[in-house]
Length: 144
Image (cartoon, rainbow, N blue to C red; front, side, top):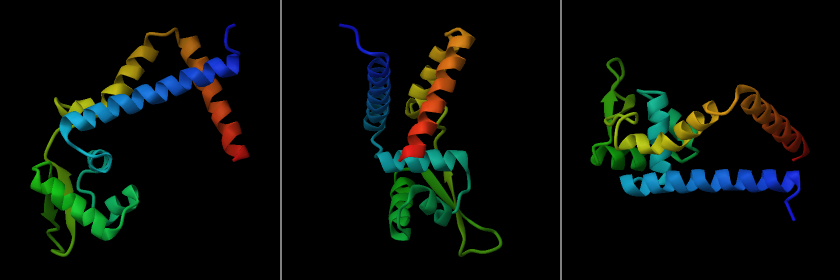
């Protein structure tokens, strides 16, 4: 017997989430970076020169935790720290790798492939799916 529409949708969403998690986990394993390290690198890519205090807030870690994380990634040659020209107590963190180039692009490959697959769908179908998911998400958020 075929699944009900809500069950079919939940199955599709579960499959999407599993595929996304598998792809990202594989990329992290291949690149030898943890989930937190990958998240930090993504934050730094979005905000080059981010201060450690801001990175700490974005990642939800302690000051000691962000210091250890940044020091470890600097030691691996993935980040660099530059001191502020006006205040040597302040430093800014930059990536030393290009997340848009191989092999680092693997961390962002899944969402880009999803975008490409969605673009291959008829506009009305993609728009209807996006609008329906937005409505469902909003209803669920309102109930939680």
